Image (tube, rainbow, N blue to C red; front, side, top):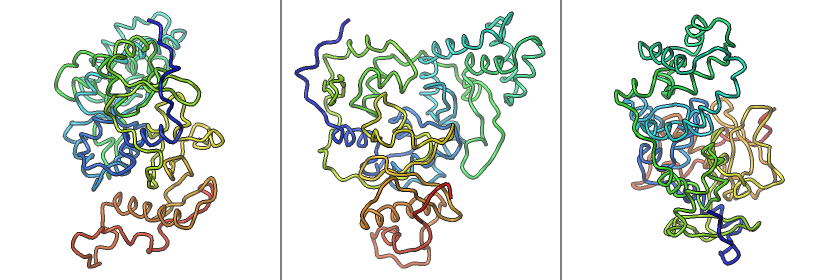
Length: 388
């Protein structure tokens, strides 16, 4: 079905899109929401590294402490596995069982890029062998690769690893991913880890609506970038009668839930410290709603993503841990008042992620914000180069 003309649709400028997206992402103000509900609302948290999901939730939730998400990991209510864009995400158990089937066709196509190294390998048999191996006990990827090489000694080892990862819904078992603990990456199937069979794939129309609720307003291409899927136009067209439709300054058609928040473009947006690989920066084809064109690409060095800082809702700098504090590198100049806000937010993060109060010996007035004096404590946040 061909898309309809967008000429009569209201235009949303960059700041309007920014504030709408920040509201959906729980970044305009911290939400009074449980970690589990937030992981559901956000359709998972990108989790290539262990700590980013914890920092993502700190930036979004009131009163969040790492122990909350760690407890969900240990009780198997959330898991780490490859889903959207072939990257590791932290998902609720329900989404792990039903989103992975939705993107499975894309994972199957991914294997085709490695077919040269899989000459003579029966992929159905490979999947069955790998499943038996990891379901007997969790295994490292090296162990999986060696077991498959024993069956197909002429195959390319990397191709065998990719095929196992793509063909099977593998989860990283705890203690990997648990805050304050460490452990080698060991894998088993999501069905084995959760003790129940994978469900049917979530209906694509339902996932479109959920995506708009977490990342909208958005174009068809935006969602395709987020999901790592193609051919989603048909789903948007089925849903069009019930959606609000806009266009951006370039005339691109944007869809949204009719009752979703679209705050005034001048709504204040406090500073937020985000970890590397935060989905806010990765889930749209056009990222100018958060990243100004002139600083595009500055969040990466080689293949390493940097931790990012939002100021007034937009990417404004980078940060890194620095001893007991953090170093902040700003891309431009900001006012003294803004710097004070950045310092205060950085101190909140440092205190919360250390799982301690900023000043446990201080006498706080009843109802007072225990982090209100964060900017007054020197040394925890400094401004400089993150490379120096």
